[in-house]
Image (tube, rainbow, N blue to C red; front, side):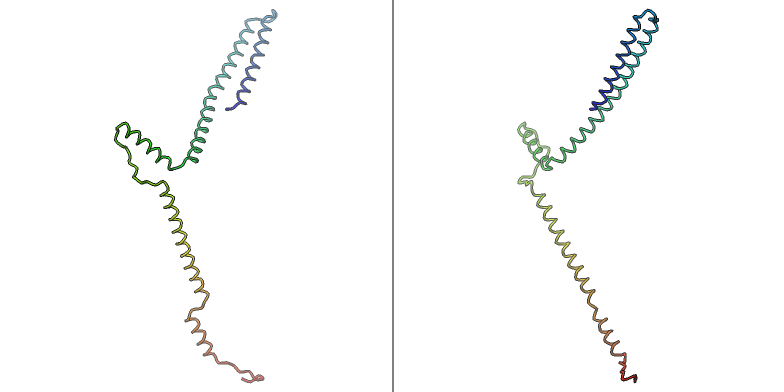
Length: 175
């Protein structure tokens, strides 16, 4: 809640009270026209009512916004800490209550159901992905290592090129 807003409204109402008390004192003095002072008091009181009404009309919206935020926060927090398997236990309890009342089941939970079967499945899938990823890395390494070695065709070509080019003998400028 907005405590500062309440304080502001309280301060405003105290100020209105002071103005009204001042006008009441002026009304008692005979040199002022009492009808005019009463009219001024009525206008001040109307201004106070309008200010309070405006505040409380908007206050409803402020409270609703705070409530929406609080409910949303609570729902997200509850969702975060709740065990996803709790729903199965709640269903199981609900179905047992129905059975005691002689009502037919709405849902049937498989006999021998194990809460950790999904976790085991997820762990197995993760292991399989890791193995598949490792195989992909090994294949990529083999490809890289093959690229670093020249192919037979390339090495054969280099050898034949060397054989074709005549070697120049250099003996003191003679060829």
